[in-house]
Image (cartoon, rainbow, N blue to C red; front, side, top):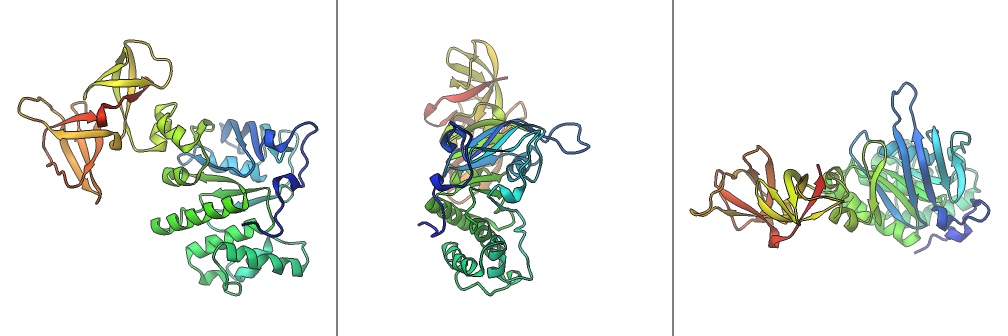
Length: 375
């Protein structure tokens, strides 16, 4: 589906530098960007590099306080760059010597708290992003965009009468109505309950895919990032530590911190030697995330879904014991306490119950290799 007034990437009216196409620079391109807040001893983001290609959906995933929202605000022009370069559609819009105002960047921004006008109708809220257009054109845009987001018939409703999910849909409609070069989403589903988050997340992904909108999402929710993204940029402290497809980042994280951000896991100490790693739970096949040498101390990635736990027999000695169990319907998640004090999480079919306090053996599922990181 295409919004009638929406331009194609080739028609976008933001010029590119001579000899450089927007497909090369990306629709959104941050190069070695740093941004500092007044009075802060350290930058909010530093050496930040990101390129979002035309029509791509990219998520910036990270914990609170690492600089995710700052990066988004830098793209939008709400914060100024200390060093580095920000380009939108190939045009330099932010640096230590250039700052193009927000209203001239053709960016659509959806905030976590919706930022709607509660005393205005849905129609008036969507039209607010169309200031400067003739009233006839404003009206012609409101209908199609509300139909696309599933809000037809709500034009005259006041925003305060709507549910949280409906308000966020209106916020997205307002951001898309002016036909932005890129859509920025700042934790847009965090104020919604879990079921509604899933529904709205799928709807937004469908909408931006259908219209080909270049989208940059900031989130701390790995499920959200994995489900929606063409690529995920995992943030460490102030910079992007790894970027790749959801499958690439999940299956081959470059560090223990990325692994912990992208999925539930524990990091267990071990010693690597000739494709094996000796750990507290046994000698396991291993694959290295980087250059690992024999007899090197490593951290071993252990995910609940990739481990198996069985009751220890009389001939098998094991001091690992089940300390916790949580029934999750399709599976039961066990907390297995090791001698070192580490609590490993292991998922097992719910019908195969083990008792708390029971001595158990832990192995990898199908004897698969574990990923190890330099300690």
